[in-house]
Length: 586
Image: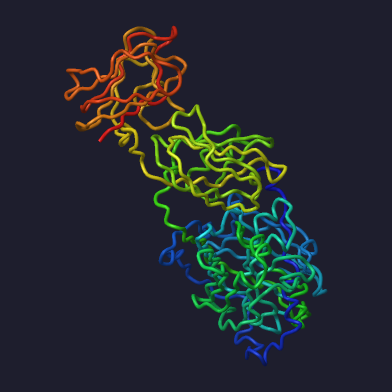
């Protein structure tokens, strides 16, 4: 865990103060008592995390399948433990890590329970508040993100639930590196107070107090009726839609949209700073504070102990622009440094938005992916953690040695960046030259898009993953298969003598156009490239060739099922050593 991961995020500020200006029950017809004034509901059967809506994919979810009375996985969740008074909302509870307050019930639910001790209704409360470790949940430019959870509000009413404040919400990731609330953005997906069987949806943005978002009120839906929300599970969701103009945030209850907020309702800078970035998710059950008080509530002698916020599942879904297949996912990825073994370079290309690469805490740093062959690149999407690079370049190379800068970002504040590219390359590097925080450069995902390059006789990569054999291997760590596995961190190395050969069986006869050899320092000073239809009779594709350390790209003309490098002289006293042997053709 990095220093940054130990920081507590600030709480929401007086979210409900706008209610002071509302005429509550007469305007919307809410009832003020619940039908069943009990403190515990029967355990409901858990629902599976729903399939994504049409056009979306599931980015992340948690179904809370832990054993009864167990805490949360702290690799996924962090506890916000401490006095509620530190959240700036007037709350009076102390949030804890105890399974008395935060636990999985063994039936597929997360439970946050508020407990009271003593005789003073305004003291002696404990409860729970948790947030996701990951803060990379957001909408790409031109895309949509949907955060959704199935929740049962505390099964209380306006008599025995006074002072209860359940919430499902999200905060802008920049808050974690010191950006100021509310400018960094807060989206409240569900809030209710005092057992009113209702729901509020709100965006907080701009500055406080006042400003373009009327803080500390925010811009919200007002109170909406939520019948049965105390006695059963209901679905609460919000969508941030960056595919429309103006951009929108939409709030949903049980799949029905009940409130929409357009970016045109505030200035462009305020909106971008609050919305056009990543978020992390929070569940909490507060007691007391400004919002319950604004509705005439707050704990009384009748307020019961043991009310709970129950969560069946939480999910993040994304709809992204159709750039095609992410060609970087799962490819060999290296970096100038890693903060620790927990944050390796490979995390940035694993397709998992909850894992990340994080560098050492210095400039410059780089992350590089080997695509395995040349591609005509057309797009890149970088999802940074809050500790982003404030300045970086995207650089490309066909050989891993000579680099060209194809994109520069000198000071973008956004942590989800979508970049059009026009380059042909096998290697792509993010060269970070300045950090947005005191921590390292931290990247959740680098996604790259493009098509295999057919220019210059390149053709299709035919050899990767095919059967490779050799005249010898230095030892069991350096076998022939290493040269065709697409991993530039593994290699084939021969015995320390001449001649030696490495060959690959393409599985069928192909027209051949190019062979790339990525040599270790122990390279061939002289070799031939040969092809065969039967693996027995060989034809030279090139004359005897002078080798060089690094990557050699040789145009060839011929056909065959088998292709081999036949080494006749070594450049060193060691064997022939190839990181990768790649055959292209059609």
